[in-house]
Image (cartoon, rainbow, N blue to C red):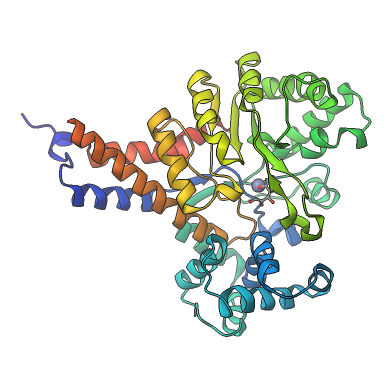
Length: 404
Ligand code: FIX
Ligand code: ZN
């Protein structure tokens, strides 16, 4: 008797590719790391063409082509900055970079002119949007079921919003960002006990799904420093107590060019063994980890093979380019099967969800297609149900398993 699954064995390449693309492009994703906020967070909630064009990826690129000084640029109002970015990267040049192509993808999906001389049409379009309907539309287009925010309890303005008992849209889940606590220890003189109480209080208020921190390229564990003590005496015990994962984003070198402000951060090869040791010493704590340097990706995969409390996620920041996303995703499939989170958007502006997921899904679908094709050549065909199972696991299952 032929079972239903066997009848759907995908043995022809064209059919296989069609099914993979259909499933990858229609499966909802949980976006495990973003800098997005719902409208209740006022100025933190960014959307529209001026925010899209003044995204720090594009300002960095604009300074390479526009004849303008840093001071002149930062003195300009945001709309003038956006006009200059558009003129420089989209009119006077072909928008070939990933970040620039992203804008084209967004405009195209929203039915706006991608070769416009100026931003008049785009500004009119975004100004006419009802924000809550626009959020629904963008989440729907990007097939994003929910995002995890980056919330800094030491940011005064954000802290006040949390203290005002803000009602959160369920699609926006919080995470407790610990950069100020762990990277600028010298500026916070509180005792270990006070720090633990501080974290307990904010966990109570924010209900975060994880605690997260970005760490420099020279991060070491163990280390003879205050950060090591804080991790051991505050953060990791609190993570264990609350059953919260710790998200480690390793390899950033902040402000290598301060004139570029947020666009001024760089990358450095980091020591993956520091994270390995942390996973080994804290087997009952779950870790999500992403490394910024391309050179660390293979080591991270191997570390995850050794420690099942370690979940590699995303192609972070300077790695979020199709050729590198493809390379990293294929390497992870070969070394980890589907036990990883292939991407996160790191979106700062709402509509970025549209291009970051459209571009990521393309590379993930291509990598999966080739993987299943090779499996077929090795003697095992897959079914559409099995592909759905794989994609659901990578797009939300692994993430939900790791989130508190
Ligand atoms: O540390 C982080 O969360 C980074 O993603 C940001 O600092 C960075 O500016 C960014 O937006 C990268 O995409
Ligand atoms: Zn980020």
